[in-house]
Amino acid sequence: MIVVERIDPAGGTAHRISIRGHELIADMTAPDGHDAGPDPHDLYDSALGACKAMTMLWYAQRNGIPVEGIHVGVVRDASQERQGVYRLTTRIALSGPLSEEQHDKLIAVAAKCPVHKLMSEVETQIETIAVPYVGEGERP
Image (cartoon, rainbow, N blue to C red):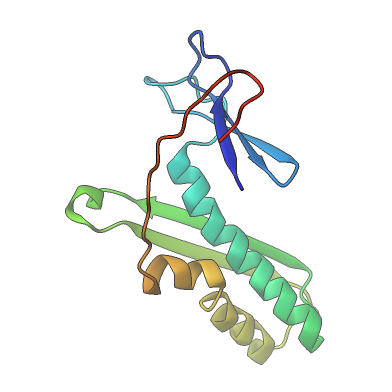
């Protein structure tokens, strides 16, 4: 389970995200927050970039493709988000002694990463449940 909790209930806007022993900080950007970490849109977008990078590396390692550097940039266009369109553009740069065929195969593999599919092909259903919060030791 991923747990998100406010760090400073007395006034801060930052939240701690705990995932399998790892911790991240998320916050709102100014003027609403203090920008102490990426905002939720940044985390969503970065999941796509990270998945593409890791999927290419996984494929390259299993197929003997000598990729060395993998750089994935994610550009967001949220100008139509309220109309139901959230556009992400990924820009991928690879380095290493790759043939053109190997390069093109890795780019094609990036489009098949699980998060890309999750974001574009799967209906996500979200259920929100209120649970009692008893005290400091209690967590959802």
